[in-house]
Image (cartoon, rainbow, N blue to C red; front, side):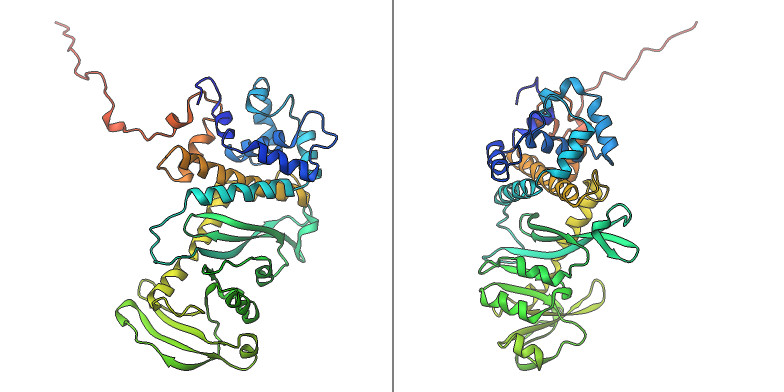
Length: 388
């Protein structure tokens, strides 16, 4: 990294611009564009995410204070509220969506963990959704209830890498279970889902594709036991049974299924887990389901530290561009941390970047942890002044 370049410019070097340009050509994003290109637009959006701007006005004020640096930051000749707002409104959001998937794939390959707590060959995914409330008067197209609007982020989260691999933005009216039809299930991988996704027709499709699911049973769950396995009560396992479903559920899922009853001593609750995996120990099934909370933590983290709740545009296209820009920013920070071998949480890295994007320090130096206890200070012993 050159010391004479801004940190923001050093960060954007990690983005594959040629790949982005091919995506732009695919959707004709730069058609009839003279100066403010899709690349300039994306860099402005990433800058706003890294600096945690609350609104379009806030973003433009921070940009206008550094007009002389636009060229070196990659924003183009000029950036105005009109051309950025118009770009977010009119340019195809799929440009940012496709590029987000490219970065998610790169980040996942960088952060793959071989020391996962459960010894399994395939990947482990947690699938869930999170609702973002919107003002109905402004975001009328996202009508959710009579006096409320909202959108949902449906996310398939790779537990081993802490990186999302699938993200779909829909109206909040869409039921979560319908999004299972949009997923492509990998053979040998595990899909951890909440009981809100308990639909045996769709679970059977997962089973037919040689993938595994782990979910929870509802209160009206009916199950006929065929035989039981030996259990280890010291690990909190109350029962481990193989059986079949009953009545209508049997038509939807006509093969054997496994039920594990587990008592969590930490919170004093019993859980009933349902899975189609017959090889793992019952305690491992319970441990796998605990990892479902990783996607909940991801939603909490991205809402707190990136801008996906306060939007810089009011159209559906602008909202999607902003959310995918947040995902691009998240993956960019993860890729930078891996390539520079930075052993800091992503949250800390974002904090550092938020106040140092316009510094000209090399990125690898600013992210190094400092040992404040080992700083050589001047001798504090001072001569005494005598007034005699």
